[in-house]
Structure formats: C-alpha cells, structure tokens
Length: 113
Image 1 (cartoon, rainbow, N blue to C red):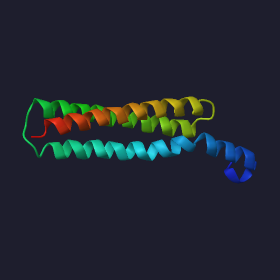
Image 2: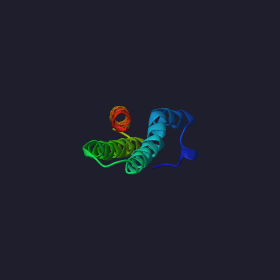
Image 3: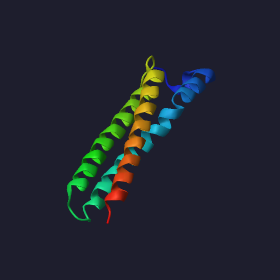
C-alpha cells in the first residue's frame, strides 16, 4: 500500500470522505461502552432486585453491541473493497445500541424509588 504522500489528492479525499462516518462512530462507540459500564456500576449503589439484574444484563449486551459497532467501523476504515458496506452496518449497529441504551435508561428511571 502506498503512503498518502504518494497518492493523488483526489484519492486521498475520496478515502477521507468514505471513512468520515466511521471516524466518528469508532470513538463514540468506545465512549458508549464506558457509559454502559458506568451506569452498571452506579446501579449497584441502589437496592438489589430483579429489575436491577435485567438492567445490568441489558447494559452488558448493549456494551457488546457498541463493541460490534466499533469493530465494524474500524474494519470499514481498513478495508478497501467492503468499506462502505461495513460502515453502513456499523452505523446500523450503533443506532441499535443507542436504542438499547435509551431502553435501559427508561428502565432504570422507573426502577428507582
């Protein structure tokens, strides 16, 4: 693979545009994994119960969803042929992770006394 210094400017700009969304999804997904872990830790300060167990499991699965999104985004930035397709999958998985996180937030809000 040639270094960016030896590529025509058009090719460098096309690669940057193709990886634009993935460059945002990757760090945000990693941050959201941390958010899931933080909320799980804060949830342990409250009383024990069945609802807490459900929320913990939901957030653990959500952290894995965000991990999958981060991996797809990373692979899309590294892939030449399948980059656009992987980026689209990464975006869809990221949106699903946000939905799960919102569901967890609502469940947590209703479980607090």
